[in-house]
Length: 150
Image (cartoon, rainbow, N blue to C red; front, side, top):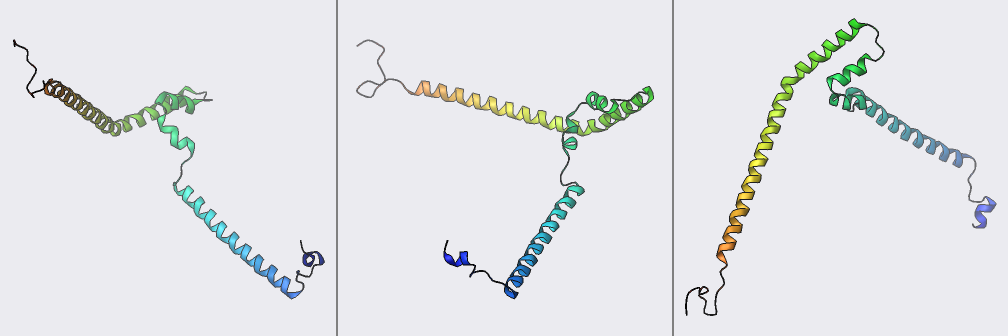
């Protein structure tokens, strides 16, 4: 480093340094306010349901028996178990009509894919057959190969 910094000649003192410190503090506080506003906006979005917890995301993949087992861990009363079991079964019964069209659409897609696959296989077989028939060996004069006598 140069002597200037070692001697402290470049450092300001008095009113100039306090003014600079005040400007930097104001800028820092403004940045902190922007950060706090962004943080509040993200928290509000999360609270509105923009993001779900892992339990909410993956709960729907559990079977009725698994959900019932998890919900009844620690219960001691048979009545509580029966009530929860009825609730889970009624939820599944209500969800079944919604799942039926989705399953129907899936089977329809599978049928269409199978139909396309069969169509492609048939086209390949026809192309292979045409290729086998169209290439006869020719003799020097351009006629087909002679199979008969001289």
